[in-house]
Length: 49
Image 1 (cartoon, rainbow, N blue to C red):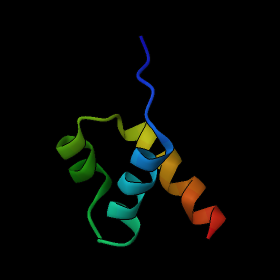
Image 2: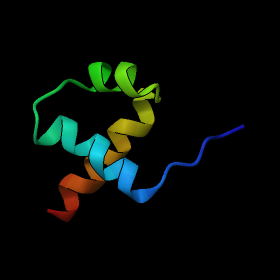
Image 3: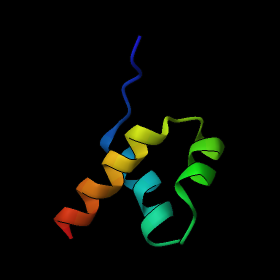
Image 4: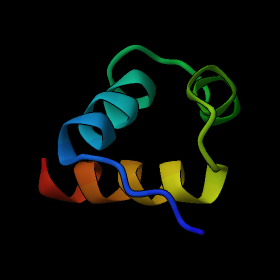
């Protein structure tokens, strides 16, 4: 079953990569989320900026 994440959680996770300089694998391991999902969120936030 897929897990749903709030928009706030997605933005914070993407910010950890974009603003704090953490790597995608590092953030995924820390937050227990999938790498594909985080990469998608990062790209969405990057496109909106």
